[in-house]
Every structure is written in C-alpha cells, then in structure tokens.
Amino acid sequence: MPNFDSHIRVGMFFYPIVLGVYLFILHLLNMGYPDEKVIAFGFFLFVLSSDMPDIDHNHSFLHKFIRLLVISFVIYFEFTKKIIISFFDLNVGLYLRFLIAFLTGLFFGILFEIIIPKHRGPLHTFWAALIYGGIMFSGAYYLGFKAENSAFLGIISTIGYLVHIIMDISFVEKNGKLIKR
Ligand SMILES: [Zn+2]
Image (cartoon, rainbow, N blue to C red; front, side, top):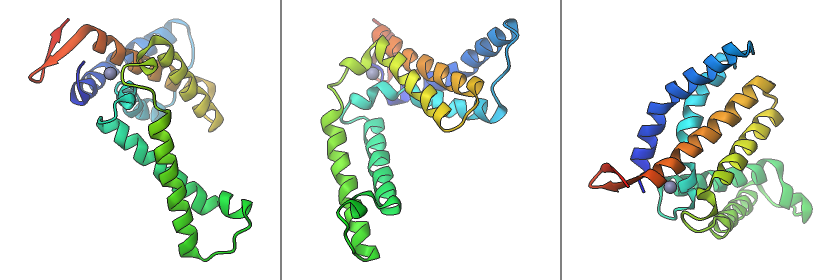
C-alpha cells in the first residue's frame, strides 16, 4: 500500500511512457493526434488519476483536497447561479446570500464523506478505473473537446487509475521504500 508520494512519483515517471505508446499506436493506425494543450494538460490529469483511488482514504491528502474542491465548487455554483435562493424565492442581501452558499457547500462536504465507500473497497477495482475513465471522457466531450482529445483524456485517466491499483496489489511500503509483495 504505497503512499501519496510514491503514487505521484510513479505517475510522473509513467506519463511520458504511456504518451509515447499512445502516439505510436495512433501513428500505426493512421489516426489524428490529440492537441498539444491536451497532451500537456494530460500530464496533470494522469498524475492526479494515479492517486485518485485513494480518495476513499479519509486521511489521505487527495481525499481532503477533493472535498475542498467539492465544497468550493458548490459555494461558487450556489452563489453565482442562485439555485436555492430562487427555489425558495428568498430576497436577501449579498452577504446573507454568500452565507447560504457557504452552508450549502459545507452540507455537500458532509455528503461527500457519507457517499465515499470504505478504503480499498469498490473504488480499488478494475471496474472503477473503467467508470472513472468513462466519466473523464464524457466530461471532456460534454465540455466541447474534440473526440480525439476526449478519447485521449479518458484513456490516460483509466491507465493512471489502473497504475495505482496495480501498485497497491504489487507493493508494500516500508520506511519510505517500495517492497514487492
Ligand atoms: Zn490505494
């Protein structure tokens, strides 16, 4: 069970290799390459994905970071789009509106803790990797990315996620060193 640092390090090391193989296969199949910006952004997404399964670990850095992202996103969304405010037809000032958005954000933070399954449960499986990649692909496509760019982002997310699971299965961490099981 390697830690955050090991997963990130391995993710960083593997991205150039995965990218090389991916481009080589596209070349053989005579298919179009993803855009430069997408390849560059892919580094971040791949490394992030290679620690993503540990979102199910309550004390992991990633878990806390993603929870913060969820809370911030909900606050931003409610404060700027006024979903709850309009639903209840509330007529309140700017500051009170922010407080309502803030409380909504905290509520989703608690919801996040409830929804995430137990550590090394369903999120540490091959199927979770496929679903995760599928979500990344659809998300990118929905945001307006071209098919070859969305496919690239979906596939590298899946591979990054799988690298994590394979590392968890194959190694244990002792005193900061990876040892084969
Ligand atoms: Zn793990």
